[in-house]
Every structure is written in structure tokens, then in C-alpha cells.
Image (cartoon, one colour):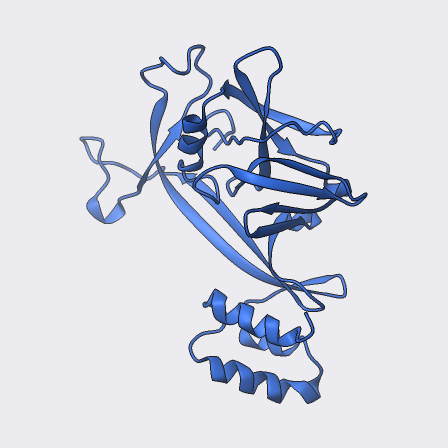
Length: 244
């Protein structure tokens, strides 16, 4: 899926304190349009919300923001001076970034892992990645152009912003038949090292051997699956950070 076909956009205020920012597209200044975008499956939140970018030098920039799970980008909107347009931009100053907050969510950027949400902070941090992959369906259809019911795919709505007259374009809302794969992975961050947490054993290996029995007893007390239950997983990491 190219960026021209499946547009990913966002809104923010002015990011004049940030030197590098890549413009994604322009759109009419319209809060309802932003909400339409946010609900087009490609964003983590259902609408763009006030957020704060905290830089390593202590500078704080406020803006309307949302996290794009399709392209792993933090988007913001800034007004185009002297016009009724807004520019949708992607944050790119990763070397200057400390963290980004949107509502109750906190994000950091970790190189190849991209943006990661901080669920638990401390000596044993718990981080999460959320990604969306879209695969256009290429399977054979019958003589009428339909797929068998057993091979049905998701029908996805998206918005085409490349019309010269966006607001009056009759076909601005498009439909794409595709498969989507949403993945959520959890990682520990300890002494600067990221480790994927996909088994209970991966958690116990975080602590010295003489502490593992006690840790296992605590996990047993939670009941249910630890890895597949984000609330339980966060409880374990809070247990590992008693002084936080």
C-alpha cells in the first residue's frame, strides 16, 4: 500500500521549535475532517488530541496529535499562514526527542523499533508497540468477480486527499478490499536493553535466580494469562519497580 493510495494524516499546532518536520499533506481546516481521518483505522486514537513533545533540552511543544499505527509516525497539524489550510506533518527530530505525551499515553522513540508506548516506567520499563499492516487481496475470484464466502476479506474505508476540490469531491471516500493485521508486542527496558516479552519465562529471566521463585508466586497470584493480559503484565512490572 503506497502512501499516495492510503493516506495517513494528522493535526498539530505550530512546531516552530522543531527544525526538521516532513510535510505529509494539506487539507482544509476542519475538525470534522480530522475526526474522519482518525476513524479511518490508521490511527491509535479516535480523534486528534492535545499533546506535548518534550525535547532533551527541556523545551516543551504543545500540539494536536495522534499516532499513526500504519506508518509508525507521530503526526501533528499546523496552520498554513495566510490560508484556510492545515499542514499535516510527521515528527522526525528523533535525536532531540525525550518523550511525547497524548492524553494519558506516553511515547518514546527507540531507533529501529520506532515509537513505543511506555506502560510502566522504572528500572524495569514495560513498553508496547502497536502496528497495522494492510495487505491488498490478490486471491482468485469467481466469474462474477466475487470471492468465496470462506475467503472474505475486510472492506476498508479511506479518504483520498489528492482531489483538487476535496470538500466537493463526490468520490473522496474510497473502499479498499484488503486484509489487515494488527500486532501488539511488549518489551522490557532495563539498563538500556530492550527485550521482547512474549513468554512468562522472558519475564522471570529479567531478575536474578534467587528472586525468580518469589516473582513466579506473584504472577501465580494474578490468575489467568500474564502475556495475553495487558493489565496483568503491567501489574508484574509495577511489582518489579516497588519504589516507582
